[in-house]
Length: 390
Image (tube, rainbow, N blue to C red; front, side, top):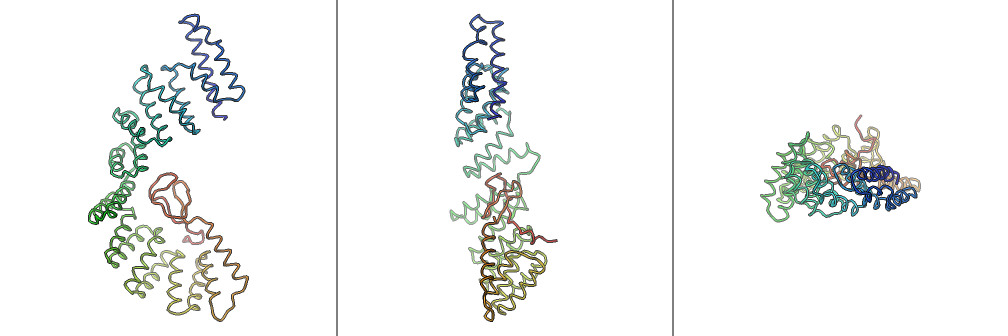
């Protein structure tokens, strides 16, 4: 409300100034416009904290010309931020219809109207305006950014690639990560259509676009698994983890499954034992604990996990240790132990698993594109504070 009143005060002043200015060159009828009932009516609405009614009065009085365009643009932008999109659209449409606007002013009004349409979900209308704006070479960067947002929303990945190609020279940053994900999305579509070779070609392009992107390697591994090539999948998934260690929690379950399909439990245990010292993630310790329990029993698993908890304390590790103690045949699980397990499970369930490193958005599932800031590859699994290497 305060923001709206602050912007209305200059509008009211501008309305009065405009009426007084016109009075010097126009008829006596226009001269009296400064003292018109409409002007005082608008001031009355403003003083009574009725900004919506005041806006309608002042906008009707304020003629659109080269000296008031910025006021109209600011007012329309304010409406859009407040969620009053229809009113913002009306103001910006009124601006564009004026033949007296300069080329720069009309381009700015087109940009604002296109963003109004985006906010309203009218993507077709917004797209047409941004394409028109791009052709004028004015506000081209903003127009292309908005087109990229629209095409991502519509999942038109080919169009996203074209826009990224045109946008990248206008930016001080690379769009290789975005292009890599666009190719991955196209590869998924090709795979779903049964075009496996096309999918593999697109994933190669994804890796060329950005060598640091893990997603195409993971998708290549999934294709290898579908072809019963578990060894090839293991090799790819290990490569993904080595390239980005924070990604190990996502690939380890598949690596374990592939080793088990190949009946290579010893190989799996050896791999995890070599990985744990380099990457003290509690999930690795828990996987090793399960393997030890299967081959050597609960006591050995408890001893191993207890030592690991001494080095790298973790709530998940503590929970597994409590569960192991409760299952030991020579011990009785007390009520206290069961309550501890219940409390830990609740604490873990209430904690989001993933977080965006760009905007801080938290989620319980992995998103390749952050739903909040729309950045790609910024959602990471949260490590417990005590899991971080010293």
